[in-house]
Image 1 (cartoon, rainbow, N blue to C red):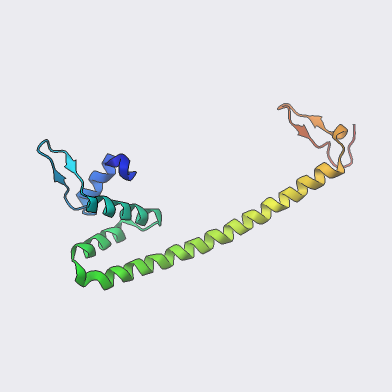
Image 2 (cartoon, rainbow, N blue to C red; image 1 turned 90 degrees about the vertical axis):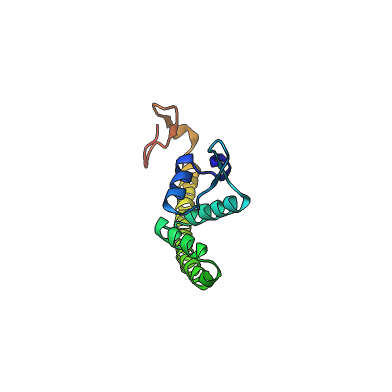
Length: 140
C-alpha cells in the first residue's frame, strides 16, 4: 500500500495514529487491508500535502469528514480558504518564474554578444578544457 500511494509505511501508520486515516481493517494475520475508499482518501490527503496544507488543517478536515453531511459547509469553506492560499502562492511563483525568464534572456543576450564580438582565435582554454573569452580589450 505504501508504494501504491507514494507514502512510507511509517507515514501511513502515523496518519492512522493521529487520526487522518481511520483504523484500517486487518486480515487474520494482522496485515492492514485498505479499501478503495481508504485509497481514495489517502490520495486526497496526498493532494492536500502537495498544496502545502498543514497537518493541523488536514486533521480538522478529517474530523469534519467523519462528522458527516452536516459538516459539508465547513469542509467547503476550509478548502476554499486553502485554495485561496494556494492560488496566491501560484501567483507568487509565476512572478518568480517571470523574473527567472527575464534573467535567462539577459544572459542569452550577453552570451550572444560575447560570441559575436570576439573571434574564436581570441579565446583561450582554461584548466577545465572550456573556452573562455580573452576579456575586454585583450587579444592574443
